[in-house]
Structures are given as C-alpha cells and as structure tokens.
Length: 189
Image 1 (spheres, rainbow, N blue to C red):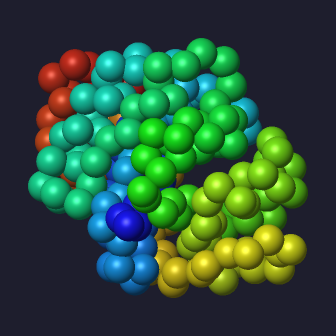
Image 2: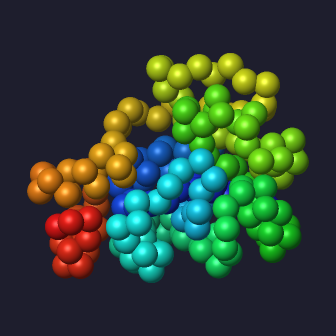
C-alpha cells in the first residue's frame, strides 16, 4: 500500500513554503509521494483571477520538476463548482483503492475543521496531517497527526502583492516559476 500525502491549494502562485511543507511531511511520515492538488474553486477562499488554470498548472509543474516524489493531481480542475474535499476524496479513493491518503492542512485550518463539508465522512476517507504553528491551537475533536515544520511565513497573496508593486521575490518562489511569471507578465509584472 502506497502512502500518499495530498496538499491542496490554489497555488496562485506555488511558492517555496508549499515545497517546504510537502518535503517535511514526506520525510517525517515516510510517505511515498506528495500529490499537489490545485483547487478549482475552494469553498473557503477565492482565487486571485490573475492567472488561469493552465498557467497555475504550468507554474506548479515548474515548481515540482526537481523532486520525483512530488506529483500533480489535477482532478479538481476537471470539475466545476466548489471543490469540496469530501467529493474529491471519494473519487480518489475509488480510483486508487490500494493507497492510503494523508491530507495536509495548515494550523489555521485545524480550527476550521468542524465547518468542513461532510467532515464526519471525510475523516473516514483520509488521515489529516496538521502543520504545527505556535500561534494556533491544536485543540480539536478530530484525529490529526501533527508534523513540526520550520516556520516560513510566506503566502501566495503576499507574493502577488510584491509582484504587483515590483518588489523582490527571489527565495520566495522557485526560480523557474519567477522566470515563467516574468515571461508571461503575470501578476502585473
């Protein structure tokens, strides 16, 4: 049985914080792969609208190219409407019954878990993995594995703001992603 970590997100753009979290959890839990799963329409968050799905996918491919344990699972981009995790995981579990899935969430989302769509079914489909952060509570009624990941305070929205104002983003994004953004004049560059 393969152990697969799933890291969902808008990846708008994918940044080094995503890669750090994935790599730390891959090794801490001895997983076989991490699947990066770009959201079509996350129920709790809006995409920036600055790039299209193909551009997000291209940036993600560039960001993951150096790590054979990192792959893209684009299943949510094939669907329309809100990307409820429980719907996605039902499909994935049906397609890959031989895999065990670990769904990675940030410390901010642990407190939000009771509000997730059909959370009781979802916890039967996946093992949640929480990224520890000192500023967030770990108190929850749900079974969560915690992994301590070095703090790297960066977000896609912060990077988009920097790009829009012409500020420096080196070391926040993989270099091939920076090159792609500049070549395509994305995010106001």
